[in-house]
Image 1 (cartoon, rainbow, N blue to C red):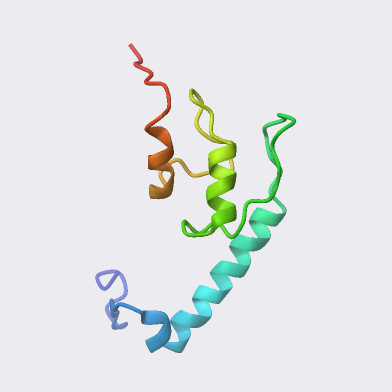
Image 2: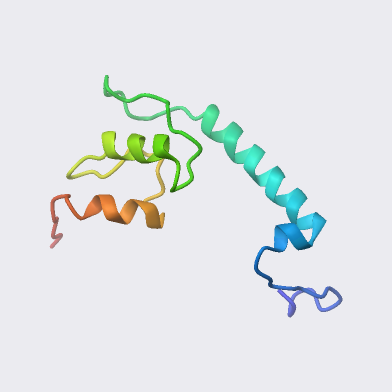
Length: 102
C-alpha cells in the first residue's frame, strides 16, 4: 500500500482498534455492514431444515458453531452463505466425502 500511497504512513499493529480511533470506527462500520448483509441474505438453498439462526458469525459463537454443524453436507459442504475459505469451516470438512475430479 505504501508503494501506491507514498504520502501516507501505514502502521500494522496488534489490537489496532484499541490504539487508533479510526481503526475502531472502521471495525464498527464493517461489522454493521456485515450484520445487515447477513440479515438480508437471500438463501439460494431451499431445503426445509435451513434456518436463519446464524449467530454472530464469529468462530467462538455457540449459535454459529451449531448452525455450521447442522447445515453441513457431506458432499456439497455448506449453503452459499458460508465462505469455504473461512478457517472455521475446515474442521467440518474432515468428516465429509472425498471427491476426486478427473
